[in-house]
Every structure is written in structure tokens, then in C-alpha cells.
Length: 607
Image (cartoon, rainbow, N blue to C red; front, top):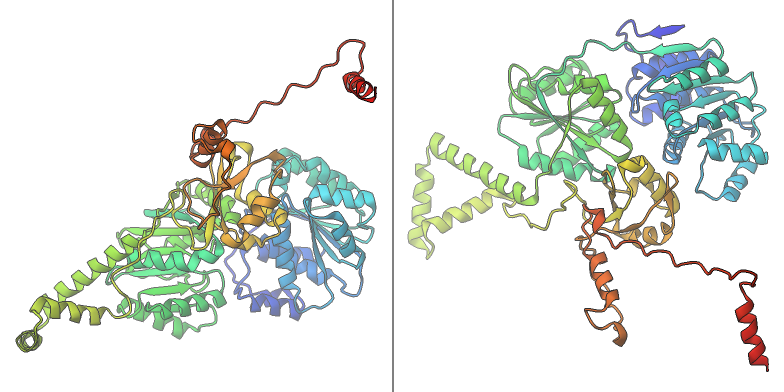
């Protein structure tokens, strides 16, 4: 059975009949309306049906299975009632955090992420204390089932998240093994962006009368808008946004910024207003009259920035909007098309910028495939660019004032001041300009900009990892490995640039030593890797190296190796010092014990 989207009826989370405490948590998080995949799957899972949901990353599928899952959980029972399989530990952590936030008002519901690379004894201690929901990777889940530290006899719901990704990573046999050890009475939900033959076979073998949920794609119309993206971390977004607005703002033009939640839209608006921007929020809590007032002010030039949610921006048609900035990734590919369609109206040129965090690289590729257009990386304006833009805008403003205003009185004032003081007219004009500019000074401290990334936040240090795209590495793998091995928050990790043969990642300076120490001899996706400071990055004062008479000469071989190591180009991994050849192993002579020569030496010594 296949279920497709047939109408545009808007639903709210209250319409699903979920526990009031669950919907309250959803509203507290700022979500306004369920996405298409949530509208179709939540009622089916609540009814107890098995489902196959074809959904891309970022479509809201986590809430699509998490909300009805929480409805079915008995908080009083300490047995495992739901099991969610994910392809990566980073996704396991992400899903567990989301479920925990939805269950915050329920009390007694415990969620545990289980994955490799974490102490299994620590996981066993948590499991023994009682856990209702487990989110984990196939390999570690198998370990616990074999050890009988995870009992799944009373499992109510089984979720396979990103099944095609688990197939690509070679976990499909593990998934089948786990499914074969679950009770037949369980309910199963399978989510996959694509449906390869092996995934279909699992669905046919392990799901019962499954409903295939497909959201029918509407006609695709992408306007002629220049599209760009920026790689950054979550904590960098506001500063990056400010720099873009500084460098690209133009009198009489407006910018539309999309935020995922109404609370986030209101908070970002407050931050922009505090920085001197004429910004207004537009979200679902506002009535129609309030929204119309914002649009009117936008058209009259009294508002230059609108921070909106997807629901609030539907049908927004204002010619002045010359740029759309996706501060948060849209929930699905169609939403992206609707968003960027708000600019480039009436034959004008438009610009769309997409903020992409390390976890959202796959969604970026999905958007490119869907729109059949390449989204280009945006070189973030430097602080020097911002300064130049401020000067340019000020000049335009002064020229417009000279042309349009009667300045006779002011000219007399300046001339009188020049006669009465020792300052000439140009100096007085400079002082007046200084007063007019106010706190937003023209000069900007210019420091070296990073080469590999468009932006690197203060306090971040760039690290070099000698594996990349050709090793089937993606940003999520990097975040998961560093967060787990070095025990630092995944959100703290900055921009990640995965190239063919190497990867660059920004780490907060306070964690650098820990990462370098903990990640020694580590593997990412079973690939052994080396991690070090990226060449050419100033990491602050360094301690003086110990001087040794034996290696004091700059021509000593060890000095040459050190020079090659320290001056290696991160964009050319081949410039690193070649690995040392393994020493030849000791070969035994025929008929002789390998330790015979040492025993002989001891005998002579004894004599």
C-alpha cells in the first residue's frame, strides 16, 4: 500500500491526539507545524501499522517516529520497549538528544545512545539501571544482545533510520541479524532516502503489510537565483550572518532570513536589533494583521531584514527582497525551493545563501540533486571588505545629502568654526563625519584570514587529518570520532572541509591538546589516520624546544625531517615526511634457536 500527499491541508501537532505533555514539549521547542513526512507517518505509527518512509535527511523524520514512539512507551516499566538503529554514532547521539527533548515533561522515560568507541562497561551500568528506549549502531547493539545485557523480549517498536546508509556502510547483515532476534509482535518503521534492492528485501521479509509513505513532489520551479553555501558550525552562525549583512547591505533593498523555529526567529531578531539593524520577526504566533504590518513596513523601507519561519513566509511576495539567507537548513528539499523563490521577483536578480553545519552535508547534496543545480561555496567577506563597504555606503550617503539637501546653514556653521578655531574646513568635516558614524566605526581590525575556509571563529584552531573523501569519510564521521574519542561536545566542533585525500577541522583552542592526545592511533571508519596541527596556522605562543648539542646543527638529518614536517602544505598531503620503512625482522639460522646467541653470551659471562 502506498500513501501519497493529496492535499495541502495544514495540520498542527495538537491534531494527532498525542499526550499533552509531548505536544507541550514540541511547542516549547518552537516548532509550528508538522512537516509532510510527519503529517503522514505519525497517525500510522499511532495506529500500530508498519511503515516504509522514503525521506531525505533533514525532513523531520526523527520527530516522525519519536513522537508516536513516546506515546507508546510505558514509563513505569524499566524494560527496553523501543530500539532505533542508526548508521553512525553521531546520528545515534543526535536522535537520542531529540527524543530526550521531546520527553522532558513525561518523567521516568530514559533514553540511551549505544555505539562503538564508548566504554561498554559504562553502557552496561546504564542498561542495568533501566532504559526504555535504546538508540544505537548495529555492531554495538549486536554485542549487547549476545552478552544478554540488552533484553528485547518486550520490544514494542523497532525503527531503522537511514537504512540505505547502513547498507552502504556494510551493516545490512547486522541489521537482519538484529531483526531476526526481535519478537514477531513488534511494530517496525523503516526510513530510507532511496530504496535499493537489499533494503526492499529487508522490508519484504521483516515488515508486515507495510504502508509506503511517499510525499508527492510538486512541480519544480527554481527561479534564476544565484545560490551559495557556507560551511560553518552552529555557534558561528550569528557572527557569519552579521559579516554578510555588513558587506552586502544596500539602501532600499531587503533581506529575508529563514529560521527553523518561531522562538529562534524571535531570538535572532533581538540580536540583530541589538547590533543596529532594522529587523522584524514573522512567525506563526503572529496574527494576520501583525504579519501584514511587517510587510507594509518592509515595502516602505522602514524594515531592512525580516527573520521568518517557513509557515509565516508562505505567499510572501515583496520585490524589495534581494537576498534569502537560510540561517537554518530547511526541513526538506521542496521547502528550500519555496524559500529561495521569495527573491528574484519581477525580473530582478536574487541571491540565496545556505548555512551548512557538519551534520548537514548530505542534505546539501540532496538539494543539489533535487534542483539539478550546483550550489557554489561562498567566500565570506573579510573584515577588510566590511570596512571598505562601510566607507562606500558612507560616501554614497554624503553625496546623496549634498545633492538633495539645502546645506547653506550648515556650510555657514563650518566656515564660522574654521574662522574661530585653528582647524580648517576639512578637519571640521572629518569630525562631523566621525560624530555621524557613531558606534559603527569605519576602521576594522584586519587580521590574516584562513585560506581553506571562508570563516574561522576566534578561539578555533585548525587540525589536519590525512584521510578524506576517497576513504569514504564525511563530516559526520569526523564529528562523531572526535566527540567520542576526545570526549568533547559535538556542537563545539567548528567547520569541517573534507577533500579527496585529507580533511581540515576547526577545534576550540581549549580542546586541542586533548584531541591531539586522545586521537593518537585512532581510526575513523576503520581507517587508521594521523591528526596534527594544520601548517600555517598560528596557535599562539609555543614553548622553546630543548636544545641538544648532538642535534644543534640545522643540517642534522633529524632537523631536516622536522623542517619538512613543520612546513608541510595541508593542501598537498604528499609533502609530509614519508613513513619510515619497517625494520627487517631477525631471521633464525637453520637449526638454531633465535635466542641461542643471547644464551651463549650469558654462559661466557657466568664463566
